[in-house]
Image (cartoon, rainbow, N blue to C red; front, side):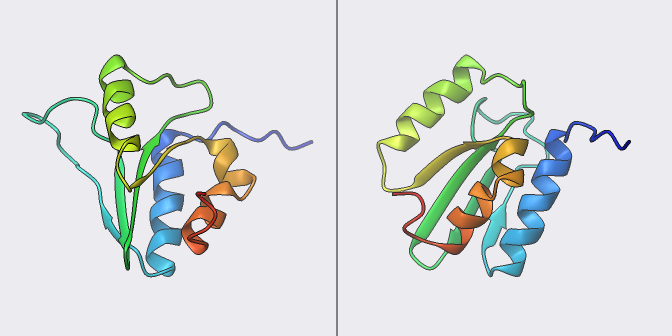
Length: 105
């Protein structure tokens, strides 16, 4: 019997970035956040007029108060704002959002 290992945040990010690149998105990820304000989402993805901001977490990962405040502020903008976990990858949610502009609605 094969046991699936939990997906790390780094593995989730690598999978999302690979798919986004394949689908023609421009991707930004802060690699070294020293000196930056805490809480900004892990990924900023742009394609055409769409801006997707995604905070990535493991299955049990929790948002920090800084992340919660940033996400709340960003949700008031036209950007599409998400917290994505491994389950969102495996159930196809991430792919639907990246492929279909109406998926976020």
